[in-house]
Amino acid sequence: MNYSLLNMLAEAAANGTEEIGAGAQFIVMLVQLLPMILIFVVFYFTLIRPQRKKDKEAQNMLKNLKVGDRICTIGGFYGTIVRIKDDVLTIECGEAKTQMKLARWAVKNIDTLSISNDAETLI
Image (cartoon, rainbow, N blue to C red):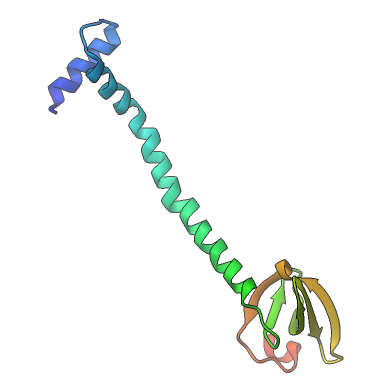
């Protein structure tokens, strides 16, 4: 389709004439909707798709928790998992080996460091 045909269609649509056919009206409408379609495609690839990937990785990490993993909670507690029962984790924190129960969804990430004393290693 050449540029002069689009100009003719746009002028006919602007004048409100009935000279253009149904196919031409469809093309004019498609040209008007094209920016919205492009905006949706850009949002999908810049926002929606990366967020889905991140959510999938987080769900996979939570599903693969096991006893002995060193974790950090969303509240900022560092501990080692000592027991898992359904969606409840029991972790040990600090030198006194204080045990706490928390929900599985409250785990932020798994630490790869082997920490014997939190304050010495993390600072």
